[in-house]
Length: 339
Image: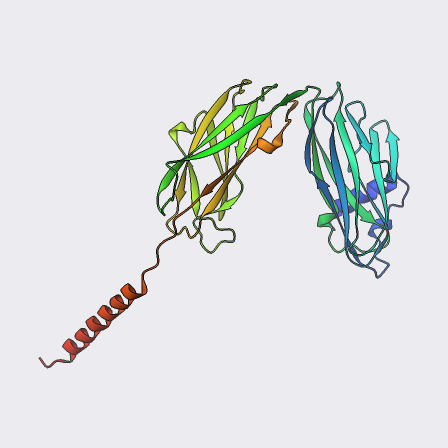
């Protein structure tokens, strides 16, 4: 466990009078790997929109934990962010002028066991437009945790006093369609519509991470994506990290209610393309207090039947080998023939 992680856990323990050195004691021989996860790890809240995050704690073993603790990794000002929790969870709060600190008393957790607690967040009319980041910790008294990296989980709560619900849809179509042979390019047209009632400031259209041009890479799909003149009004951004890349298109202007826009890209089937593939595009709204009321229509999935390279028929290969053999024999005989 890093020194920063130890200092953070000790600070939280001291706030609740749990003993500043208990969590880093290695006097006992028992070892237990506790992990924590936020589901989801990003939410958008307004005065009219509350979001629930589930904190999930797991004991990865090998030994049981007699007393596990977790919680929110920073104090919360209730005048700008209201936090409630599942009444079935044992929660201890520490209230100061700086805000409220929430500690979840997980209790005993056997090896392989899981516990969870739901926290609900809501902005207030006094909330600024910003993102509150929580490094939510899990810790234990007595046992040694061999992996401190999974003892923290980042949670980001985007809050705003504004409330701007909207519903964005995205569809994808390929031209001319049909089977796409290796080495050829086809156009993919993305259509984004705003069903209202709000108007987002920006819309990000993101493709999942994919592998390209390297047949040996795990998850290799064998295609690449490039901008076109009619990518506008969307901008094209390519985030490369060898040997993968992620593509993002951004509509940087407000999309009025009831209107739609088309942004196109080129999809190149690489010559090494072995199989068909699936393109997926996810649309995300951006702006203060903007959120999508129906995320089921925020994904466009497009199947692309790439044509795999055709193997050389066995009969043709046999003729080629026979020709090479005859050629080699003729050359050897010519070299041995007397001058």
